[in-house]
Length: 192
Ligand code: 5GP
Image (cartoon, rainbow, N blue to C red; front, side, top):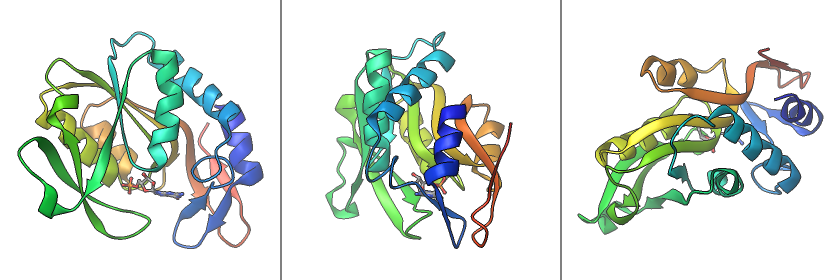
């Protein structure tokens, strides 16, 4: 998605530790016009899929998922970060290791909002090592629901999450794939 790549080139900031900061338009301040274009692009790519629900994870995925959901006309469910102590039988739960915070979180979805009749599109802002997505896939499978596909805004193609997810046979669509970034020059290389 050319518009997104241009924006990343213009406003993305490469930090040490393979972190790309996009907080001026994607995950702190949010450019809603750009989000609309992202939502339309996800709809275009998954138009043929019988999606009835979008699943994402708090916090950064929620805004993107909500705007995209308007093009699919489906509800959004977000996986919540929870304290293990509060997890009961009414929820599906899994563990996710955070790339940015290097911590392990329990995340949950209520059984009320995900079940075997659901055909789910998973949406998130970033794909790095794939832990967040592996957790979301686990939640969908626990519910007996079907994963129609995964939509990611920025995939860091030089980390192994994309390969991991594609090797599971899940359809993964990333709107911008970064093959390399240099924290000294700020240069970002995209896959075509
Ligand atoms: P993964 O679980 O694939 O390793 O990491 C995905 C999660 O980590 C995303 O939901 C995102 O919040 C965060 N993340 C991973 N890499 C980056 C990055 O380079 N920049 C930002 N802003 N967040 C990232």
